[in-house]
Image 1: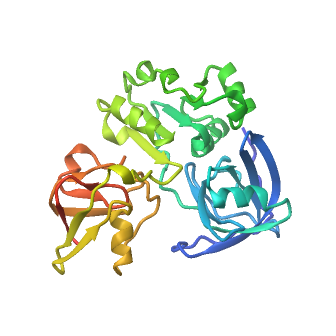
Image 2: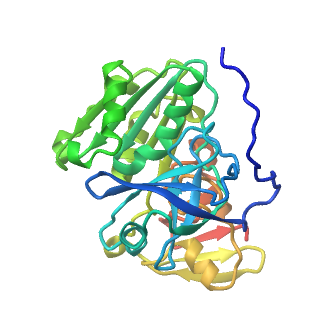
Image 3: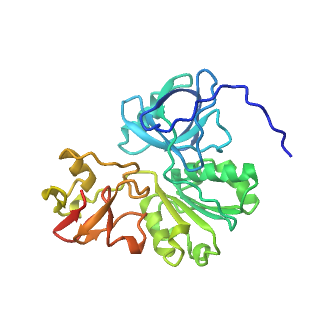
Amino acid sequence: MRAAVARVRPAYAPMSNTADKLLTLVIARKQEIADGITALELRDPAGTALPHFTPGAHITTTTPCGLQRDYSIANADEDDDYYEIAVQRERDGRGSSSLIDETHEGDTLEVSWPKNDFPMVPSSDGYVFIAGGIGLTPILSMIRSLERSRGASFELYYCTRSPEQTAYLDEINALATRGRATIHHDGGDPERMFDFWPVVEQCKGRHLYCCGPRPLMREIQDMTGHWPSANVHFEAFTKAEKRVSTERAFNVRLARSDRVVEIPPDASILETLRAHGLELRSSCESGTCGTCRTTLLAGEPDHRDFVLHDDERTANVMICVSRSKSDELVLDL
């Protein structure tokens, strides 16, 4: 049995509202862990224990170029003296590029307090984890926490293009030797996608967590339609893609004022309504957290989220990603 250890470092006091609170943390370690992927270990300059987080949490980081980006915390939740994030260089991604190219060990960054839109639900029946690319990071925190606590059983399925582009390869290989992980490299060829059906054919009471590119998540969403909806969880690590060439404009009627706003092909409902002066809550803006859920009064939405259950789709819409099949949606705003 592990003996209790008294904390000797000061800790941040719990706060009821941390939405606008910022931490100034130092980059204690910076290491390239795969082609185009760099891990950063962030600590308090004074050695203070950081605000507690739970597996699946993320922090918002202000990058050297001034842009803000969300990064999942990868370390176990008991490791409260640092936050580990992994940054993937994105094509045309100024935020990620500046964080990789313009920082050094010893530099400081401003980050938010941790927030969790992808929490791990306790499960005595175990977990199925499915990750694609850098989508491994929130799932890795879950796995590390389960390993540390000797918690419920789990299986990890990790899909990447190649070994060279696989983050935390040695750690995942170690899990694989114990039968707890499967790594699949597809070379970027959709025809070589891993066959997940044997994995998800039976639920067996387990909870499934999936994070990665949206095509992967769509595949898993389609395959798990027979699972209880409360047992399937998704998080995107990028904003939803905009398919400008195929979108069309439509109207949104705000029922409380009877005001009509046109939603253009290249902007979301959320973005457009904010541009017209509405203050609206959101977080992930990729259709995975549920923060922007809005009551639907009329119209036929084109649902593109990973949150709403089938029985909720007639009365709700996620305005960060969903669009409209009808000419107008009437929202309770």
